[in-house]
Length: 94
Image 1 (cartoon, rainbow, N blue to C red):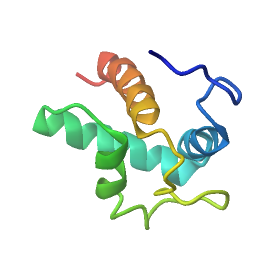
Image 2: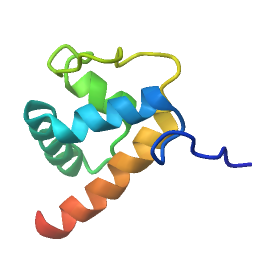
Image 3: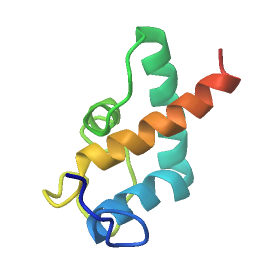
Image 4: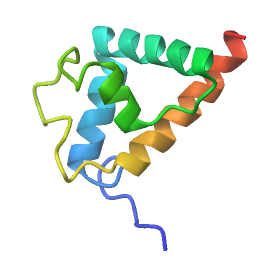
């Protein structure tokens, strides 16, 4: 059973905040694009956990609102979002 999204289309505030920081902070967004290139080279699908590991356990990511490892963050939802973005990215980067 799928959980209803409850904060600006996301599972909760923490998940929304993490997604917002990934896509709306330029260094984080550029890190995401580098991660996509890494995934493409290795022929693997991106994941939120993989993204954090790629960014050296999140230390190279900017975020003033919520810990990247906050237990309330929906890793599955952020993984799904990264994969949608990755599919779009691949259309232009093959």
